[in-house]
Length: 193
Image 1 (cartoon, rainbow, N blue to C red):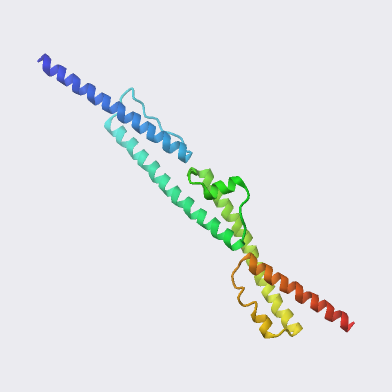
Image 2 (tube, rainbow, N blue to C red):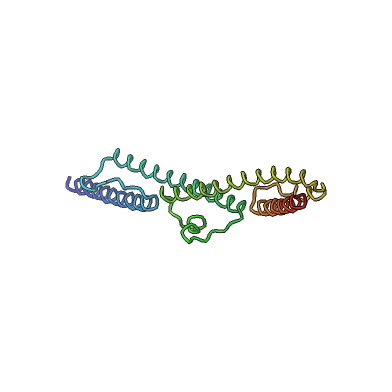
């Protein structure tokens, strides 16, 4: 009988030890995820020993944190791609070290704050892009009027057909042509006066 009691006691001690190991692992995993995500940890006490249902609930909590991490990492990839695409179209480079880290770092934490900063960059560059698009469309209309007014040959006008993209290069080429035509127009007006 004493042997059976001792064996049962040893089994219980081993189960207790395993439960403590599992609690430590859960808490370590949670700490890692919470630091990375910038989220607050949830309590899991070793004394009194949590029930099986509490352990399962905590495992579900860790799974949710892990899924949140994966979702945020995907969102970071998408936002970074959008920032880089807008930067290419605007033909700009990033000089701010913090912004470079946001867009290029391999170890960027998927926190809400970092995602918001990336969204802010997308918003900033999207605003600049929208403004450039409006200005390019406006210059194209202005050029058509000026070319008509100045009777500019079609072969010269065709040189600008290749500038269809909304980029800084397109903006610069059209802006230069508008300025050139405006100067010719002013000179023509002086001749008539």
